[in-house]
Length: 196
Image (cartoon, rainbow, N blue to C red; front, side, top):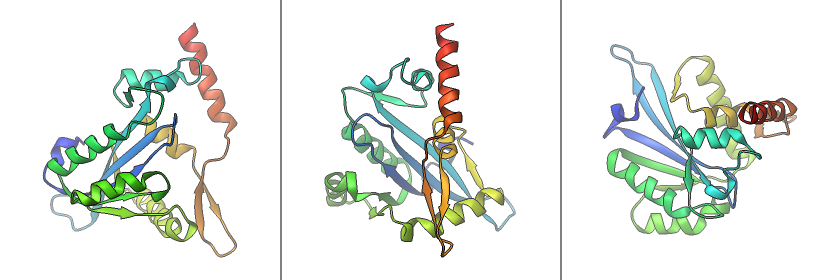
């Protein structure tokens, strides 16, 4: 599955903006049907950014490896580069039929206003249990049914692997990222391999 196969096709985007030195990420989702089938599947492609100051082999050697392999785009400076993300979104809209771009207004209010003023279909999506519960359940169901195809991006795999669904008494689910010792061990082993 390659992004080029979906040129001109309808898609939906979502952006998760980091405030300073964390990962910023975006995803593109393309609904599609296999030849001769009526079941809708979804192709998902990921894009990640990180300030170059955060690409540190002693803090997270995986980031160094992923920048080298092109899974993360290292941007100039100490903080998240909004210009790089704006450029990405404009390119997406020029290549594909962008129907909506979801964003959390907490970190992207000015960015979204500028993009909306330029005619881009920005969609505010607040990170609340009410907004996240049903989509999280749907995502789980699509994965279990084999209706979700991803671009095998290891950054997305790690991030999704760190998420745990927290259920409340009413059956609502909220995705959380707890501290996971196993992940810390994985990073420590990667540090040892690069030093060895």
